[in-house]
Image (tube, one colour):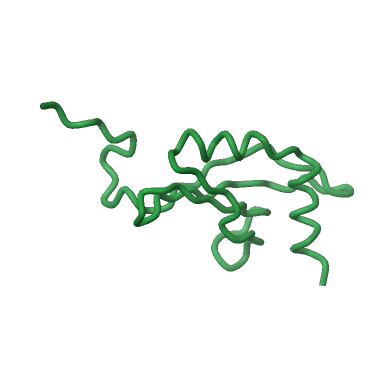
Length: 97
């Protein structure tokens, strides 16, 4: 029996989050970087959150893990279904005090 290859070959822990750059959004006169932080949860489901801006860690604005998929392709389908106006609304909800 052959082992199923892990697309995260060489990573110390396959549940470590991985950051993916998405298309930036235009908000007012600003171009805002958008990244997706994807991780495989302990229950083998996939979860992700959005990071806005160029900051790292606490300096970046972040949503909760609003994306979920039973498989990684299902998670990415949920991400692709999100329209740019929804992403702008999520960003707006994070910057309004």
